[in-house]
Image (tube, rainbow, N blue to C red):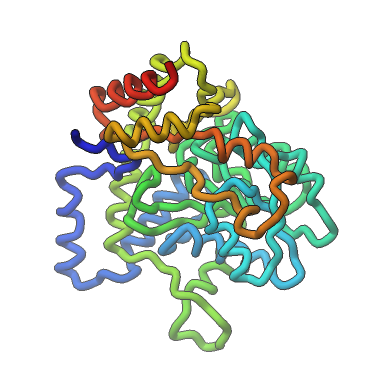
Length: 349
């Protein structure tokens, strides 16, 4: 029985050829191709500028430093998210303040966010979880710097505008399993020239007239070449993810499961197809036994790492127990899609 992977990057036959002229030129570090990727990406997003980095975490670190966030400052983030956000906040010696999520959407709760605001709150980081845009307008009303975490939502739209075009700063990840990939890699974007200049300065760590702590977070031309090609196919990638997700919805709608919610004012790109069930543990065991790789959509909520009371994060705890993330990626075959549906049905009958 062939294993169906949970996540897989999508490449094309000609992708290997992208690297030949770069290798021949001997310019493999950050050069003109990386700058070209930045221009293409900012044009796609419709923002003033973008800076290519070696990871999404690096992009977030630069964002926090550009906003002069440091010791004594508080940054609100959801508990139900990967640990990269926690790391970046700790890099600048600020205090992470965790908020619960909305049970239906998996996105950070505006209600709980408002409860966590203090005089020390300097920013809110808003991830658009699993490709479904957060209700970003409500967070913009807080009159605080909003950093959009679009690691899982490249190409998603909220009220006809792309995620990443609302916040003061937006960050993206191009890790191997993301909507587009450069292997590792990331991008930070903004409409503020002042913030972009500051982040570029922080990312130029050598051959400077003055000295201050700067960082080596640049993306190589090799990665950028792949990123440019991947970005050209983002429309197709999203189309395929939506087709696979529609098949899941059609095949599972008559069963005792909670399927991903639909919102008329936002376009889901289905970075993950996450279902909820009180039988989640049974479903995951059955899928794994039948050759389907199942990985937690969030490995561990952040409040558990920080030993905070579980009772303060009821929706996060419930989602953590009840979710199953099904394989979704452009190269998933129709037969594999159907097999997953059939095996999942067996687990809940």
